[in-house]
Length: 107
Image (cartoon, helix red, strand yellow):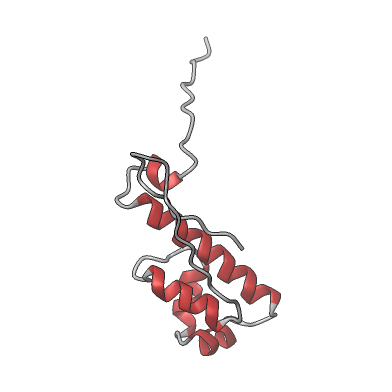
């Protein structure tokens, strides 16, 4: 007899679903790391070249590109985006009444 599986709808933020502290920050950082990875690939840079350009050691670039972004602040990740040749624009607007604001990354 087959067991019935319980399926739970995700929130859209895996970090929230996993119960991590500050899930929105993790979500934004993950999207920035994806963007940084795409920028490095689009420029045809090796990890060593990317490391020189963004001011890291190659092993740290390797960790970052594998999604190990703990220890990197949001500000530092935004610096990497700039160092790789993109502008960063921050836009602040009011959220819906009585709702916590959210952080979005669009590229």
